[in-house]
Length: 443
Image (cartoon, rainbow, N blue to C red; front, top):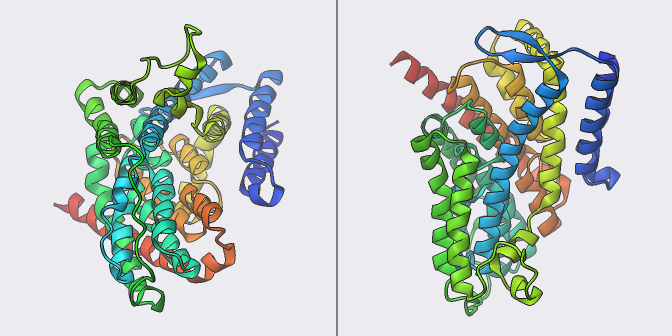
């Protein structure tokens, strides 16, 4: 039966990877794969286990208990993401991100390159790399009219956004997964991954700044738009501050991150309702006036949440959990360590792999494969590699996929023009990580 389990997983994985070729949303194979794997386990009464990290062995358990355990761990991530997404949508409701456009004063392409790269790096660490990419490409479309030039900027934004998301516990789904799974702490993650991430962003930007595409000035004048809401900048800073507050809340209370995110959402929602001068209500529970609920910023923001992504994470995380529960990932890790004793090479290959296939299941698998203690250098290196490796192909990260959709970027154009820059940045950051780690360990 293990062969059938592996076949189902591989077929599902291929369907997710070939999403654009098959024209099927990746949430469909993810959910189907998850349901089939657990159904096979239940119908054939396959033994399930829980990995004991301390003893480095498998402990037998019951399918109901192990499924509930994995569902709880997955729900922590999903509820956290729902809160973060809602806060971002509330900021957008008040047109808060338009404030960022006010920072753009120069018409020099080289200065704009550095400005957008730095903005992408910082924003992605707070509102995640996917949202940061959407925000900045939207601004690019208003600032740069020449499409070819804009494509170059978009490519560099992808690299910077992925680098920025890697060092923050709230900057990328994979780092959030490692953080919630207690594999890394916020402070240690920043301490060990920030410098390599900066190198990963700076090196490609430095090289690209010498390209012809970033020489001279952009054509035309900037469009001046009246702000849609006078509370836009207030909601931007309040929302960003509320998200940044979450790691501090976890550090102080030792409660799961989603609790802090729900508190942040409540605070932001309160101000949103006050500023919008509508009835205070998270949802139209009492059945009064659909019109009032329609104009509620919280109600409006909740309706814009990207539920397909949430369902995809549910499917893929529980599918990987099925392999973990059967002990397959545990045994695979043992075999991998025997074949490649150097874990640095394994993690670099993981980063390269994340450019080809989705980094979420790769990190989910690594959590089940390795039993190193919290804040082991291995987990920090995995956070860096999985977060930045996806930049090497435009389909290798959520930031790349959304940029591809917004600007209709050709896969092969990106592969020829941007991929090698991403590779150079990834390797430079990886080398700096290893040097920094060895320096800290030998200190």
